[in-house]
Image 1: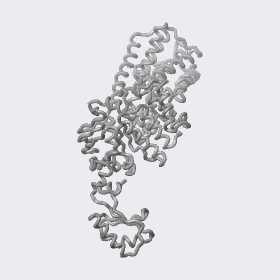
Image 2 (image 1 turned 90 degrees about the vertical axis):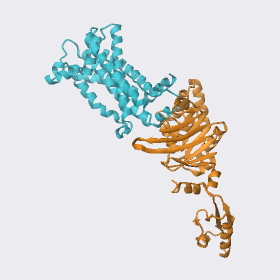
Image 3 (image 1 turned 60 degrees about the horizontal axis):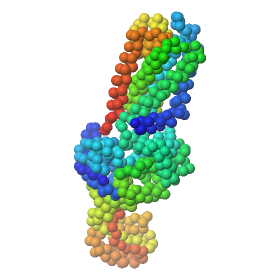
Image 4 (image 1 turned 120 degrees about the vertical axis):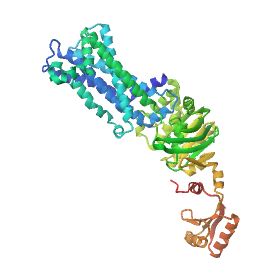
Amino acid sequence: MTAVAVLTERIVRDTLRDDLPFAILAPAGNFIIFNLALRNVIDTGGIGYPQYLLPVIIVQVTLLGALTTVDRAARDHQWELGVRLRTMPIPTLAPLIARMLYCLIRGAVALLATIAVGYAFGFRMFGGLGHLAAFTTLVLALTLALSLGADATGVGISGAAIGRTGGASQILLVPQMLLVMLSTGMAPVDSFPDWLRGFVQHQPVSQVTETLRGLAAGNVAVSSLTASLAWCIGLVVVFGLIAMRMQRRVR
Amino acid sequence: MIELDGVAKKFDGNILALQDISFSVPTGSVCALLGHNGAGKTTTINILSTLMRPSYGTAVVAGHDVVQDPGGVRASISMTGQVAALDWQLTGRENLVMFARLRGLRRKDAHARADALIEQFDLADAADRGVTTYSGGMRRRVDIAAALVVTPRVLFLDEPTTGLDPRSRRTVWDLVSSLAAQGVTVLLTTQYLEEADVLSDSIVVIDHGRVIANGTADDLKRRVGFSYCAVSPVDPADLSKILAAVADLTDAQADEEANTVSVLATNGVATLSEVFRRVDQLKVELADISLRKPTLDEVFLHLTGSSAG
């Protein structure tokens, strides 16, 4: 356990100067820009645009945050430090667990920052404590799922040329942009062409965003909550198994 | 104590990196693994430090089998690789504290240990700067200090002095000797024969994944079997004249840098007197003529049958 704590502290120290401030600024910046640009353009029906937008901003910064994990995991594997850790009397999975703990810390910080900025622009949590707890849990579950996938990717490509450039995270930027743009996070499903609606409605970003919106409003459909949880748990299990496998590889 | 018995390592594509490695290193002694690049030195160290599994054979480190009980091995060893294994975003002190805590020291004890190591390794001025700003010698010193946050029972040093200036190299040598005196078993790899000669109690020569010689430096020199007869003239200009006079003898060579002509002494003292008789006729003034043991370089060349690299 000490090893995990020490390695987590190490990442926090590493990132105090670059990544952690970004974890606060990114959601704030994203929220303000999208809110100013789109609030009078997109018809969200009965609810105000800040209330509509905030959940997808959280999903977006969770995706962006996971991208930084790709580079961190790749670096841990390329640096000789990673080799030395494997010759030390610590659990094989300690470095992975430490990276995931950091991702959860980062996710919690980003969530707090987003909600704080959202409140300034009129977003409100209408649900009670139970809804708030579910809201937080869902965001952190999504953070863990995406971070595990990013970690496995980072370790997987650490030997390849792209892994050595330090820009490995860029390769995941395109799918993440597409998933956010083609979701009901920014605009309701009616604003998409007919042939895209099926995908837009059911893909995970839309599912999770809808659930978060419901939890914020204080009334969430059980089917929506189940779908989102199923996505997150499924991804945690699949990506988690792959990430652990990557970590255990002994030549 | 380190023991390898018939260790082989096969990589993907059936490349045999190690074919048959067997040797042992007694507790508290220093053993040098000597060999060309690609001979199998680093693979051997990687197997002993649990980074790789042997394909065949057994290896035991400090009483723990590397395959059956890798955790026991890891608790007993420290290792420094060819490249410093540090967190490049932290300072020297932060790195040392981190490794000390990973080794189980409490926060306060870890700081005290880091302070002591900073003092011992002459890093006080740089301890609170990021390690990326360090020179090569300083990086190596922090790296070795990081391997000593707790005194290991077995220490692996993979080319510990490659790229170091003579003073830093001397520091590392002194350190290795004092660790061995404290009972630490040290296995180091090196391409420097001088280092193996000065530092180690025993030398294992590896070539193409096999142990081709194993013993003390003196053993190895004796194993070559022959001594060399060396002649040094007072005037270096006479070197070529001497070489011409003994050119028909085995392995006659002139070394201008050392101002010596050497001849393999196939008949021992008889060769010496033959060389002396011939040179005497040249009426050349001699500074020295002697029978000497081969240098480790000559032994190495003789054993591996190709140029040292």
